[in-house]
Image (cartoon, rainbow, N blue to C red; front, side):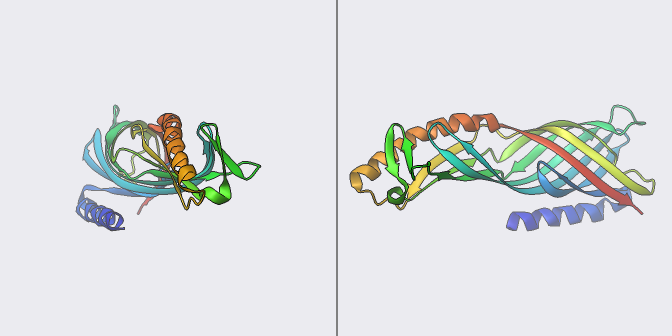
Length: 223
């Protein structure tokens, strides 16, 4: 919450400071969630953007032995530079850095028999409690992309913008733990060991997420 309030403070300050320089403010939606950017012209072929986005998304997935109900908690705050190769075109190349607050949490789903088979060992769901996973990514992530749109143009009317790119968030750190195991000390210790090995398989699958695709569509209005 503090980071969100701080980000809003930065955006408000930039809107005020950038008003004389024809700063553009636009809302957007896409794979980084719902958010906003402030576009600040630096020179005819270059502008800076500061923005944020938040997303919550549920999906199903799995590792080697376990199936999960996953939930992505997406949160990004970025500082970007847009370079326009042609002054008569809205096409631009974009680079920058983002504070990446993306995390993925998950809870394992038991099989049809009401249990889990992990590393060849079978456990009843009622005696092992819940099995939870978490994935955390690099907090500082470079961004590279292309886009169309000049939200800071001085002409009145509606403006649309598009971003297509990649957030290099790195291979995530994963954890896989159980809570509430009541199967006895020996079985619970074996479960912990099996989950530690299964976490390696989860980490391998999670490696596919080190590049986060970005597709955003924005809209603004100049009075």
